[in-house]
Image (cartoon, rainbow, N blue to C red):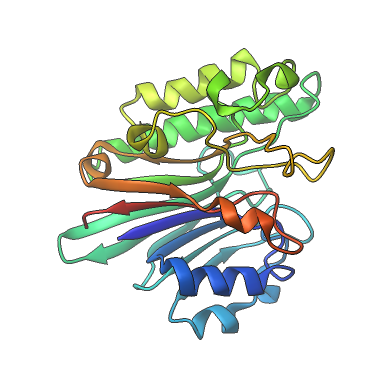
Length: 260
C-alpha cells in the first residue's frame, strides 16, 4: 500500500498537478492539506474519475484537509478530538480495510504558530498536545495507523538548508520540537527518517527569495507510524520534482510504501 501526503496549497488551483501525480505515483491513499475550499467546492468528480473515494473536511479560503483512497473510506472522523470549540478544518481520519485487517490514516495540517509571541503559537502547542493525546488513544487499539501531513515542524537542524535562518520561528522553536519529540516518544516512527538519515531532504521551499532555485528548503511534511505500521514500512520517497512545475505548491508530496 502506497500512502502519500501533500500540502497542495489550493486543490482547485492545482487539480491538474494532483491528477498527474495520481497517474504517475499511483498512491492507494492520499492525505491532502490546505485544500482551501469548502466541501461542496472540492473537485470531487475529477478525482473520482481516477478511481478514488473522497472524504473532505473543508473551510472557505483557509486550511482544509482531505483523504483520497482507492478503497472505501470507513469510520470517517472530521476534526481533531479534544476541543469542540475549534472550528479550524485541520484534521480528518478514516479507516481502510485490507486483506490483512485495516489501516487507519489521518491527514493533518498543524498550525503554523507565527508570530510566536501571540495566541497563534499557544494554539499550535495546544494542538500538538491534543494530537499526542489522540495518538495515545489510538495506540491502545494496537492497529496500523499513519498520522500524515504538514506538521509545520522542523525536527532537527539537518532538516533545514540553513537552520540559523529559522531561529526564533515557530516551526523551529525548542518548544515546538519538544512537542514533536513527545509524539515520537509515544512509540511512533517518523517514516522518512526511518528510511534515510541524510541531510538535504526537504519538502517545502518558500516562494520568496529564490528558495527553490537556491535549494533553501526545509522538511516539515511528515508521516508518523504506529508500531504496527512501522513494522510494515518498506520505503519512503520525497517527490521533489513537483516543486519545479509551473505554478507549483510550495510543498511536494511524500510517499511511503507499507506491506499491507
